[in-house]
Length: 219
Image (cartoon, rainbow, N blue to C red; front, side, top):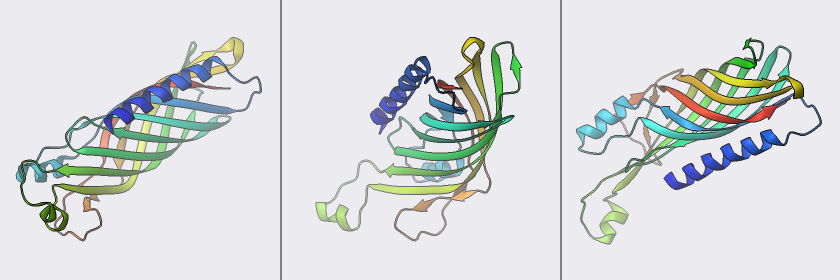
């Protein structure tokens, strides 16, 4: 997962940069972006439960990568973006996040555009909790002693952010280069054991900031 995430994030960013250099001549009001960066997430109640059981905590810092496309209608921009993220802890972590957002290119300082974004999204988080130093027969682990348990959390998320872009006047071209933002869950989401009915599960509200280098183009 870690290697794949790093490779995908790098590929998306490099692809976006290359596309930004070879822009189609046809002036469609579209903005395409590729991003790679990190985010800080909150799993305090899950981590408290893991610590209570003597298990490794989930890292709060995650690598992320994504791709997005937006349609520009003066003065608004309507966009959609998909992000994946993961970490470098012993627990196999994956997070999928799809958001829809509104933005605008009307705020500028010289050639730099500051584009505020207001969005709503849906996030699916999966953590494989690994228990170490266990022993038993092969059949024990197949039937009663799992050393790897998947817990999931899903829910709606509000998203506010800013994307910084450079405007090339000679070519009427928008080039995004950095995005920063904050996510906040609409409701606390309970952690669920995959394919099982478990009571007494902790709940965490999604909240945390993110920062990404971006590449792409908009006409």
